[in-house]
Length: 110
Length: 115
Image 1: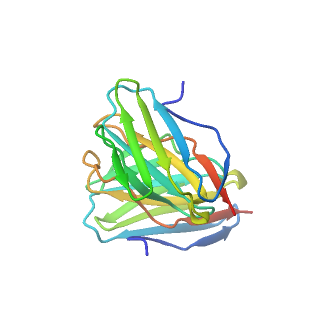
Image 2 (image 1 turned 90 degrees about the vertical axis):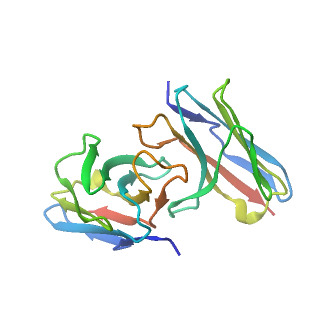
Image 3 (image 1 turned 180 degrees about the horizontal axis):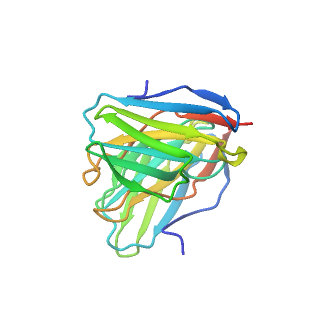
């Protein structure tokens, strides 16, 4: 089983839609959780950290469920500029490096 | 603009060439990383430097040789590469190897083509 698994995608949604991405992780000792965004042929950029209490940044909401080892990202009112690959990233433990999911591709259509 | 600077942005090299990739950060981060990313795949960790010492080598072939001259610089020396080594090479940094609550900051990468 992969350490971090994501929805395979791709997701093609109309502008203004709400879209949700899911991610599961296998190591229950995982400490830190992130969503990164990667545009085509660009570097990954941190979108947001994910906390147990849930956190929101504008149109983006991230949730963490430690009991189910599940992370989600909700994007409301999708914009064309949201088109990218979204990477779920987990730090499995204090002595381990970030582990990346395989990414979910989002295309927002006009 | 990214706070991690990588040069060159693009590199084409022959299989007998020797070249180096460079990475620089001035955020005071004490952990630096090299990743390799193939098309439509997530980044794969190659090396980790913590306080200027090599902390992790993820079984990378010896044709890739990392170097950390000081806390701000990270190099990746390339020699006798194969066409399958063509990829995007990403440098990243974090506050330290253990304290990374803020995630990693990535450079814009070097797109390497081996011919």
